[in-house]
Image (cartoon, rainbow, N blue to C red):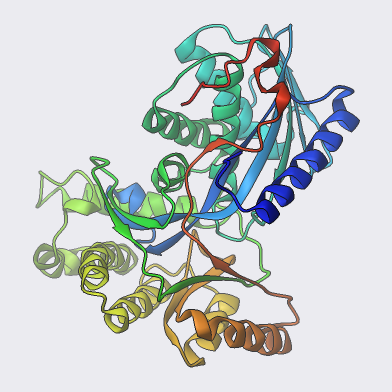
Length: 421
């Protein structure tokens, strides 16, 4: 723990770590050796562009997945979670590899991508020792705040550390993305994993998801990132998320008849879209229109942020929601209603759905003084219209994955307390 933390914050972290340690001991009969955390994220703008090799603008946030871990002398992994009853267990030596089709009963669905992270880490680094792992998440599952990516990254970081392995953070992000594709059943982009690994306190990143070139921007204190959970859970693996990616890939194949240099929709410009859209199926043309316009909005948002023009930034966020709703068709009644409620409130510059869609969170950009009233209005108006109970968080840009609440046992069992990824 940082010695610079206020006493009250340090005490709170100590209490949380003690609770994690008790839960770990109840499940595994021994204390944990180390603690880690990986953050969730909000995405200011740039939605469904990352798997099209476009641009995004996310921030890691102060809601996180926390992990307690202790290495084992054998090669068995045992995974328990405060959010799920089923314990996952498998052995590196001859244990079955779970797949996204659910064919392995011993590995519950919530842990399949974690088993994939472990398998891929061993494939790249050599034989690993096993571990007992307990996970507790502050990030609501299915809210669109990237709980799954935080879980994969935090687990991969922790497992590497207790095995004495130093891994580049970008390599970890790419490994976790691959595990999600091959084991978790979601063909997601790199954004969520990248920001979980690279997040910076007080900053957002303008990220080129093809090259991974990153430009960091200080997030202004005059603007709050407010995540409003609709209470309608979503699951990228079973929603229309994978279908949208397939549609984008189909559009690229069709457009390559006239634009052979096109590798992804990120290479499509507005003029070529206007020229060739009539040759496309209307659905594919609409998907292209969203990606092309959303990439342009990311660049415009960076310019607005640099200029301190919050009104313009809010306008771009509003336009993003309309595009996601109308052209990409990943919104839903609950998200549209939440966005409408947020936009009506004084001090809110803009709002949009966030994440994969079909449920989860809306993001509102609001003046800090407006946040309490925004929360009150959401908590009153949204349940009245939907019979669902929302949640509202004012999020702070936070650091990426790392050690958390390291106690006196941090160097036990041969673990190097200085190990980083």
